[in-house]
Image (cartoon, rainbow, N blue to C red):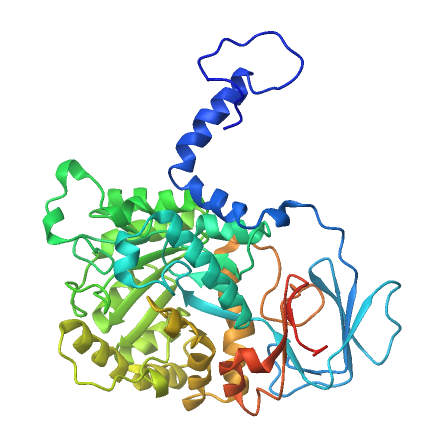
Length: 479
């Protein structure tokens, strides 16, 4: 790589190729090592998107007209407005019929509904569309390339931003940010940090005990990290922050997808959780915690955690405690409609899944009753077919919320949660809103989602225009 002669050749004085310079040869050796590790991922993605490397011309201003607006917060649609997009941002939201800027592209939206791009607060960019056995055995390059394809499909479902709740998504995020592949902007957590035997410890029993403290394949690829004790926890947290994590993900109870980690188990001590909270806080960020039971949630709350993931099995007193302390609940409408299991459970994982599904109505009812700050996330895992139901899952929120409330949760409210990363926020701008200065992440919907949220469950048919950062990724208006 970058060498026209063997590395052992002695540099000679010449004025042509620079590959013989010592710094170039050192770079070659470093890249050779990195290409065989995590650096291979970005290079692989770049190789399939080489045309994107060309520097594009500055985009023309874009003026959207003749639409009805859901701005991310209002309970009703707004009429008589125009949106000017310039430089990836919403430059202006103006009433009336002002003349477009010189050279602007004008899009007549035909009276359809314009709204902010959707935000999924609990997504796994690398794990969503790939079966678990493949994730545990396949080459890392294949996994990343498959995840890049799923990222494009995620964007075309209208989700322009995701908070990644665990997995080695740093290279994919970089490739998307650099325009090498299309996809949502990613708020990465890095490796999901657990303990020995906790949710995310996928080691086969043949790997016990870990020889010489060696790491499992899942740990080496950045899927999860095992930490036992506060010192080890601080190390794992700092490793993720060093790689660019915008927040940290821990697991304090068992989970459905980890076969030997029961739901009722408490898998991290308060001291371990507090060490993670302190390490993240030192970097200006926060910790999100996977927890289903009241005991798991309460332990996380006492340790200073600011966002609980799931919480389906917690009780009323715990929900009231979340509201009192202003702690976020990022939960999912599991077990509703098409997501409800049909056959009787036969394995422990299936029984755990049923128990979680049975808690869905309770968790949303408690969140509403106590005014808990609630975010929408889908947490769809290990199935390309299930991943397509992201919008359908959002539509199931209408069991507890009006369509306007559900849409606000998946746009402006989730945007507020993304901003909680503070100085670790990788994107300097407002998300989930249609207002001047916000990111130009926009969807044009065929119909009114405030009347029928299920429109978003069929994005191929009902999303006529999809824009992220002012760039149009789908436009079927001409057709």
